[in-house]
Image (cartoon, rainbow, N blue to C red; front, top):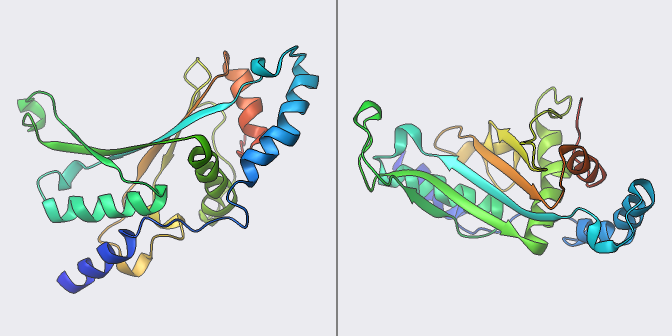
Length: 201
């Protein structure tokens, strides 16, 4: 098991995501195709009015492994490989006895992708990872926050090809928060649909 853990860490720690044929293709398509489409469909007068992707935040709760430094390292290596950049540990700001939580205890891993990296991750998510979900029929179109941002829960990190099922310690889920400049959920949903998000409703 120790040897397996070492292999997992070594594999995932590279932080090198499986690149799409053109890692900038979604950003290029947004600028060349989606912006003109949205300006025509929504009647925007200025290109700066067109909603755009601001950032993608990945958040992995540590739960039952928050006291296990080795497991935390493995989880961090996996999230780093999926995102393509180094994640940071989020620590508890205060103790909560009901949750057996101590101040300073590691409770989550978080990484924020901006610019090209945000578009590149979204491209891999919709074109590579989500289609690998068993019996996939689309994602919920109701998980918007009322301010043009969208939240998606990933239950299994192995849908990303950067993670080898044979080498993982356990199945771990994480949250994906997509932040846009859209002023309404309707605008955000239209933007994300054109970016390839496969909404089912």
